[in-house]
Length: 342
Image (cartoon, rainbow, N blue to C red):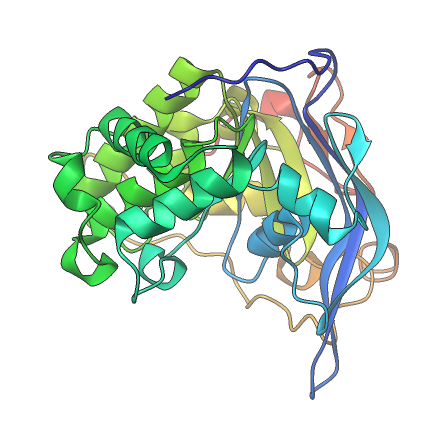
C-alpha cells in the first residue's frame, strides 16, 4: 500500500476527547448516553474501551467519527480534537476528507457495512478514488495490495465477489483492508470480532496487531471482552452507564484495579485452569439511562456505596494515589496496594 507523507506535527496526543455529553431523544424519553466523557489516545498507542452492552462505547466511537445520527442524537457539550483540530461541528465536506483518509473505522458487523449489490472491487475502488486522485486501474492495483496486506488469498478473485459470497472472517479482512487502504493515522475498531468464531477472532486480532505495528497506527479498540484488551491494548478505559469509571495501563487495570465495577468485571471472568464452584456476578442490572440513578450511576450495585454521598453526589475522575497515570471516578475506591482480585 502507498504510504502518505504527513506534514502534521507529531507532538501531543492524536485524539483528545474532553467532557463529551451525548443524549438521544426517544419516544420513552431522553437517553443520557454519554456524561462528561474524557480520554486521550497517544500516537502509536492502542487504547481499549471496555464495558457492558449499553455503556456508551459505540456512541463514543460514532461521535468521534462524525457518524452520530442527528436526530435522534445530540451533542450537548464537549470537544473532540484530532491532531489538534476540533472536529465536532466541522462542515460535512471537511469531515468527509478526514474520515477514511486520516481517521478510519472497522464496524462491528461487516455484512451490514458492505453494500450487498456491489462487488468488493467496486466498493474498494470507490473508497480509494474518493480520497485519492487515481484512475480505476490505479485504484484496483491499490485494492489488491491492501487485500494482500491482510493476507487475503487470491485477492484478484475476491474483488469480483459480492459480500454474501465471502465468509465472516473474509468479510472482516476486507473491512480491515478498506480501512487501511488510505493509510489512516487513527483506526477505530468497534467490536471487530463479535460475530466470528474463536479461531477466526484470534486471526483477526493478530492481524490488527500486526497492521498496527507495521503502519504505526493509533487504535481505539472497543470491546466487551476483557481478554481482548488484556492482550492487545497499552491503556484501557472502563465504561459504565455512559461514564468512564477507571483509566490506566493494562497492568494497572488488571493487577491493581481500584473501581468496584472494574474489580467486579475481572472477578466475573471464569478461571482458565481448575474448577470454579460458582460464578461471580455483579448484583443488580445496568440502569435505564432515561432515568439513571442520582449521584454515582453505579451506586445501586456497589458494595462500597455510602448513603448520603454516593446516592446524591456525582464523582469525578481523580488520580489514584501512588500510581501515576491511573485515574478513577469513585468516592471510595480500593487502594492500589489492595492488589488484584484473584
